[in-house]
Structures are given as structure tokens and as C-alpha cells.
Length: 194
Image (cartoon, rainbow, N blue to C red):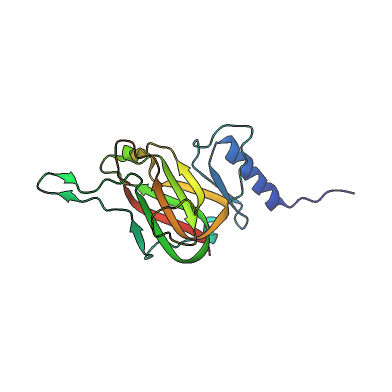
């Protein structure tokens, strides 16, 4: 009795192997076109214990961040008389309300690049369903972390989970401020299943 192989499954597995060989952080496989797409080549950690998960096809994801209400722990204001900041946040945060609970697969962040991109470091992304009144997001589930520091050459940062994480609120927190008490974010995209 012979074995039957589905070529789509075989190609998908080969895409996963290629992802590991090229040290990519994630991959998608489109079974209609047999197209394998790698993301973050060279940024994955070379390790025999890495597990690369199948990530939903980009065609099956949509960005839901546009037009949603956002809030922040503070806003950096320049005071003209002494040219200094009027705020100093020990753990600055930025929060997006999706309006409903969704399964989040990817968060893309574009840090501010025109001034001091190195300030973007020690970042946590957390997901939750109830916005705390006191700015304490410890009840939110960790989605991803970014040690940094960021360099403008990196472009958009992609934090992804193949399994997804359910929640209504997405918060980006600078957990270790260092010498700069600012969180400089230019743009954020939140990708969920269509």
C-alpha cells in the first residue's frame, strides 16, 4: 500500500524549513499560488530549539488600527521659553482601543525615525479586554517584547504570533526608560483575521 502526499502540505512544510534556514521570524504560505513568503530574514535566533509556526496568510489578515481611538500616558510638549519637556514619564505607554475583542496576530510599529531612534528600546506589547483606570497594565497578557535599541535602518518592527492573542486593547509600554522618559511612536498597525 503506497502513501499519498498532498503537495500543498509538502510545500508548506518546505516553506517552514526555509524559514528556519534563513533565520526568518515568521512565514506565510499561500496554497493557491504555492508562494512562500519569509519575514525578518536573518533576525531569527539560530537555535536547534526554535519552533517556527505557520502564520496566517497576509491575504487573510486585515489592519484594524486605522480610525480607532488611542490614548497615551502623556504627550511630549516643548515649552518655548526654556526649550524643555513638560513631562517625564517613568513608564510611558500608548494604548489603542479596537472597539471589540479580536484575535490579534501581528503588531507592526514604526518608531519615530527623524530624531533619536535609539530612544525606542525595552518595549512590551500587551493585550487586554478591560482598560485599567490607573495605567497599570499588569493584568494584560504579554504579546511581545523588543529589547532594542532601534535603528532607523530597521524600518517597521513586526511582532507576530501565529496562534494569535485575543483582546480589545493593545498597549505599547516602555518598561525601562533609561535616560529618556519618552515613547516615540510614529505609526502602529494591528493585524487580525478577516
